[in-house]
Length: 365
Ligand SMILES: [Zn+2]
Image (cartoon, rainbow, N blue to C red):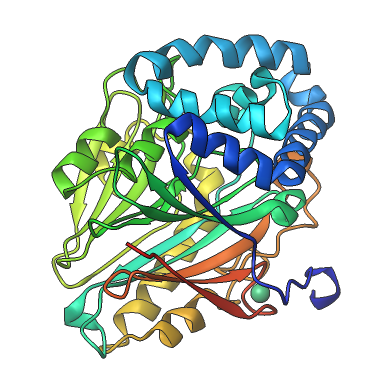
């Protein structure tokens, strides 16, 4: 597979932004104009390639995406402002950026991007007493070029460090109040028109306590839900499984927590769509769980070793599923990160972590 694994020896771009949400959005759009434009081109190509399955045109997708924006506007106007700023800075139509950020609603039900892997360990399970977490971000291969890291100092919210790609609002990272989040897609059957889950999860990056973070995840009139791994610097570890109307809160009572892309709680499994499509997620879950549990004293390196695991290749934790027949099922690990929440540091490999080095970013706050 090596010849098909793009190499990114360089660190992903770091974008430092500050100010109001509109200003931060503009700074992101200006600094990452190429990535934002490319992300929209990729979304256009994906929808075109999937016409047989989705019967959706780009114009149809714009109409769909527009239905979700008023809900985001009502609950989280500041993040709609951020999106408007990104569109202005990158010189793209807001309607196009809205599709990218509401892709779940527009096409995600047909997309089977099922292979993100998240895990966290607290001071009971680490060699140096730090709180650590790891996330493999698996997505369509074309978006790998558009990965970047945002160091944000919002005027009215805690500073944060987060990873994103293309024109997506950031949602995976941590803030200066010691709140960290990783998101894994899940597949409930009760999705509706409402606040896109990207916007809901963006709000979590502004939370000051675990309680506040979970309240955002369960925001009224949410369109759908993720599984959110929520970690606090105190060592609190949560896995919050969310759909549009239901949720379940799992707690890492033994000092670790693992999640992939299927629901673990029986209440949520009742509304899981096509669970037989999520077999690979179950295999990855058990594999990651075993690897996390067999180590008593985790380090950044031990978590990085798990991120490079190839059992059940190509649907492995280090994902290389680029050769599958259905265009909507193609995906790979586009980046892998370990967050040392205690040290306020992110170690990120751009592309598959089996082939690419990790780079370290620090939150200055
Ligand atoms: Zn690999």
